[in-house]
Image (cartoon, rainbow, N blue to C red; front, side, top):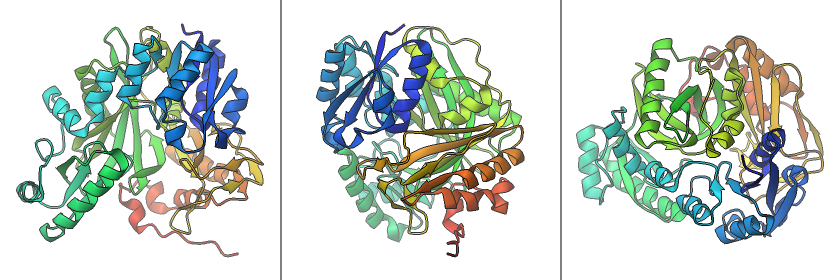
Length: 449
């Protein structure tokens, strides 16, 4: 087992990893930019190293600075968390060259699934259902129009190196194609330095259902049930739950088997997530694979009673997967608490938290790195906490989440708590009647002063 793990990340996920490492008797090293000097992950790690100024390019994305921190602290492993360098094959490769274990898949596995076109080709060979679309990258507008006409509108234009909704455009008719093509390529180039584009059939009113998987170095791949991530805004998830209210026993067996096929096709090592689109007839299609721990991993932890970070570390240390139950034994929902103003187009709201009281009680979990007096920097993702509730049934879980949200007090900034409160009381959501476009018509009411 590792003696010391350096965490190449910040905030909530860094603190989450520190807690598991402490329980496993592993020392930790926190990295931080000057903007994160007062963050809790810095306080609770055994050691902390400042690696640069606030811009990510000069700190959390700087491989030379991170490797210098590894060297001076004598860490023998690196945990990348999620975001930043978590799915960067070059970073994983550098770690291997220095004899440092990257807690995650191999560089080759990351590359196979990181490029959307390569991933799709790999899934087709593995027999996993995929959305109809272009055969690889599309070279120009003329080719794109022909492909779109052949598979039928609407289509979705996607960046091959995309993520987080960047470089993505829905096209409903041919006259709109060229403008959306140009915008998608420009955004892809600016966001990823790669303007490669492919095209898929746009599945209307789909569910976004993903399967948590884990694979060890002995060749075993298992799935750990699903998460429904259909409540999202501009392709950014806001609420996740397990089990999915849309799921059936038969569908879980089929999708779980496909998720295992996906992992086995690349001899996957570590924990990861296979993401699917599911249409209203319960036909499912591979969308992408995230070769890292997910933001919403606590949802799975709560319903199968298993520490996924611990499993991730054990797999990286060469231990086999044993004794994981993949059938949900409860219901769990996670609400992402972002420093955003939901009544002003979810505009980011950095600043000082003047008052902070997190929810408590049976079946209530809060993962966060903030506290009263903490100043949220404007440089990073706006998520500041995850509120997770667990109960025997979905109805009980929603009721518990309502109570927990009413107790969650954050003052000094705007947050998404009011949005979540209204969502939990929405009749369609409570009935499980929603899809990825649900929030497009959601009537968010600004409370009276």
